Length: 292
View 1 (cartoon, rainbow, N blue to C red):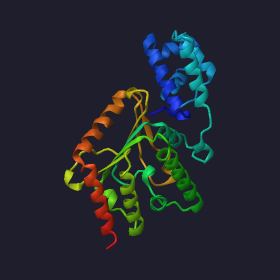
View 2: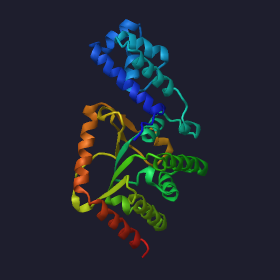
View 3: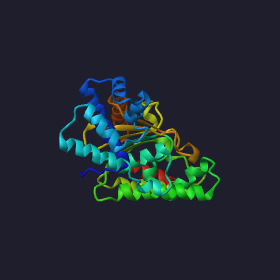
View 4: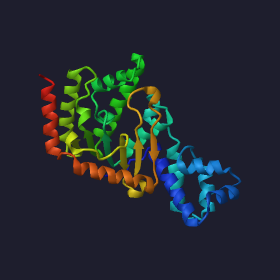
């Protein structure tokens, strides 16, 4: 799969490279700040991705870390420039920082692993289901809901329909299949949509049945992997799927010691869940029951 670099992925690659370079140079964040006459908070924000970097900043850091190879410097400068581009989702109105970061990482991922215990992941939602979820969160502005849904549908187009789509593995708690928000027709169409998607070679859907018991007591999460190695894996904790005022409450975890527990948890979930084929059969049965 060819790498996809957008501003969010460029920032991820750049800050990982700079953290690694600082570690290799045996410099602390305080020492870097003192050497460049920067504030410590600036170094921290650069390394955790909460602030952008200029080309001048990147070159100063590389010089301090002893990175002199022209090709490596050129690559880092190119990433810094790519990180400052304005992507399609911001043009479409997804300006909230954490939501914007999530969309960008999702857009550039080679593999996405979702665990959901309340609602279907946005990447797999029908427009009708997305609207019902937003209305359940008391979205009163139809225009606002329409804008959110339009961005969600564009995300699906950009990720699911691209020539090199990511591998997508979804574990759904059985409870997500029965939450109709008062509209069985919408839920039925959503479940049938999942079955259709689950027939694609790159999409793997498993249902975690009630009888499996308790396995993970975490909120919904997504493990995102990229074609640069497992050290680039990130986890997104999705604290809310409902209100647009809560859409920037998610959290991105990057360091391996934070990501590994979620990778391990997802592996346990897939072992406890129904097989892919049994899950699609289960989804079909629940959808048919909603016809009755």
